[in-house]
Length: 313
Image (tube, rainbow, N blue to C red; front, side, top):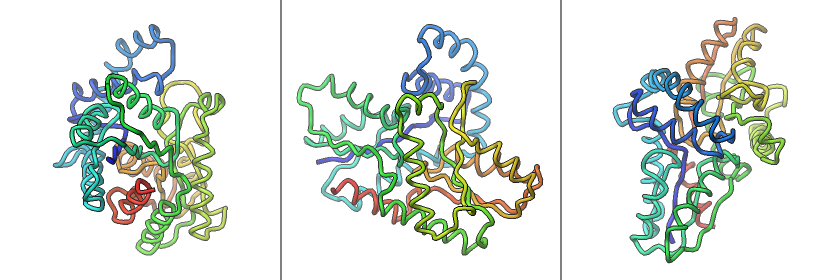
């Protein structure tokens, strides 16, 4: 048996050229953008990539580390720590976009004699745009394999008790360090509202996580808010939008908020730049007070132990 840890992926460098390569692959996936292919192909290459790549590269430069992209640094550490907990089980890391690819991860596992792959996509809440994209790529990879291994696919873990306990402990540590906030805001990555209307249960899975976390923390409902971030394009996405909510809370004079992103298993551009930097500025510029970002679970020991128990089942 072997484990495939999967996540979204990242550019290999914070440069316009590297970001352009990454975005081309990411935004060409029908699971991410399902617009008519020819029309989207023209828009992507003529408008989106030339305009967004230099801008996004600058954002990556603001969070890049000596070890590379934060997402890659934490993902490698997660892989290594999980391997240490499962010494007799090969653990490979594969990204839906960029490197290391899911193809390379599967090749690595099969080369070690693995005939049963447990796939853990590090998206706590299922979405067709994330978890299903991993499924699609895995199926594409295995379609070229004569001897297909058995596959156990973990759809998500939105209400897993170990996951909720790790989130709750992380929030409590932040409360102990900074004081309990007037409001705990839980920001999840958004998806187009149309995807949910067509059957994606992602919004419900986010609500499931929120309800379980609020119960674990014992907070009154009025002290917690759930929002959605990182929208792209012109069509409506899940609401309320995080940035617009931050502006509203600042204008209301909220004195202290702390922000968590329970849908991210590892800190990345969308948490470290968009939430910890951009939205802090929006909130405080509008008149808000103290603002703290509570980091993702990353490679914390309780997070890795949760992964080990998930795959062991």
